[in-house]
Length: 149
Ligand code: CMX
Ligand code: CO
Image (cartoon, rainbow, N blue to C red; front, side, top):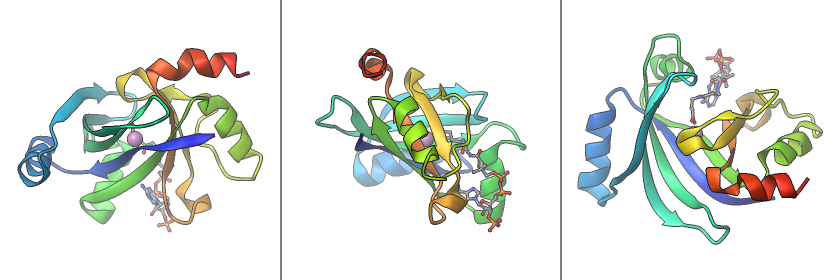
């Protein structure tokens, strides 16, 4: 089951400037920031609210760390803007398998490490009406997910 909008991923050229825009305009503060070398991003997570499933919803601001990263490629083509949406689930493995069985391309064989030690995978935007879609299990939800199998 997908139980929350975990985050909306927003690509930008200058993370510090974008963080400041969200702070000055809306009052959102940085909850967490990190560099994810595998994904080629420097990111800031701005927490919007806790959700009823024990997770939370965030904005994920993304700046590329290298020219060959997926976000750099996307920015060069589209400019700044909404890059992906992410749904939260207690069991990313089961959700990915279920969606894959419907003929939608799941980009990773196994979920990878996402923000704050979450486990993430992506669905191909061409199979999802032009929306790059991420599935996320937050770090605290792993045990519950394993028990669900
Ligand atoms: N949203 C919608 N469509 C997208 C897209 C996006 N974010 N990124 C690419 N596309 C579209 C392109 O417009 C292109 O369409 P056309 O053929 O009609 O022009 C098509 O998909 C192929 O795009 P591409 O530029 O050739 O890019 P690639 O195929 O090399 O990569 C994708 C696309 C989805 C496989 C790649 O971006 C990917 O692996 N994404 C998942 C990882 C990721 O995005 N990581 C960063 C975020 C990390 C995080 O959230 O923690
Ligand atoms: Co994301």
